[in-house]
Image (cartoon, rainbow, N blue to C red; front, side):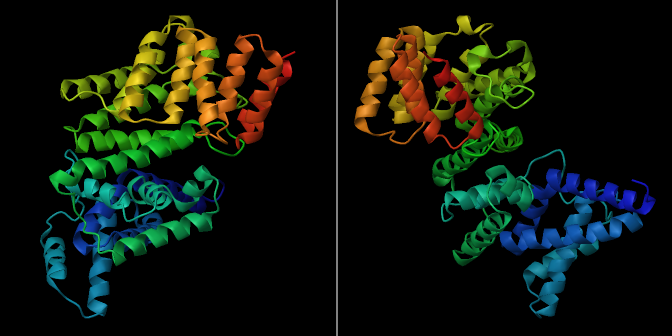
Length: 422
């Protein structure tokens, strides 16, 4: 950039964006604890960011950017209360906190510890009074620090739609008088299950995009992984959080091998396993060990992580322990019955016992109608029919799967397979 002033402004903009990405959850959480309203907290934090973009190019980046943003946002809250002539105990407490702080650049939290504020923010973002799409948008916005535009891009929806979801979510939380607090111990499992479900949805949307012309959106999955890791530090005694982290680590380890340089999908048996990220696999194994060490058994995510571990630790596709995978799918099906799990079990059965046995499972699913319209059902059936030498039927199934999928990359792969059958 030729203009040094413009170059400096651009550098500061990137710095502000980086600070926001890393510290926004704590900033908003700290503010929400003071003002008692997550929507107001985020608005105040955003106003502080605007001030930073204006002042930092002129005054320089402060020693503790997060502390600066938090302090500015707090002052804005106080100014607002002053304007409304509603000086209450909150104002007094905040004013005292700001006035007595000896080092204005000192962070408002201990950076080496994780307090409950972020955890409260996670539970607020995934509160059951919100619809699932609102939970996802709010989690990525206030906990993940993604911009509205980034969320819209990730889910292939207009920016205005995401803005509306977030605004509506904040209004719903305010109208419902949702307290900014960690749920009571007896409520924790159910509320955590909702949080895990939101992160699982976010990860899966990145792992296999439900629509669009990209097969994956790794940045979305990696954001879910980052949030899950943070959550595991917040609730380390909850076994399933470690199972969730392990699952994400194992799945993310294959990202580098799941597509060609042109973005074409590379299926699991064809992937170059030397490109799998061994560090993530080791982290997944360690997370599973943490879950097992708690001695309460593996749950929904831990069992899935066990399946992913079987793939991640096989040196070659031929070395995959398919019998163990079948057992894990059977356990998963008993724990959380689902036709999708049955379909995945059929794939594992086809590898351990042969396609004929697996086809009977798939045909039962077809007859039940429980996966009607789900493109992977004819896709799997087509693969099994192909292995049984029933090429014409296999081609029809793969063509049907291609018509049903909303992902352009996946549609191209299915049509190539169908065309290759004679």
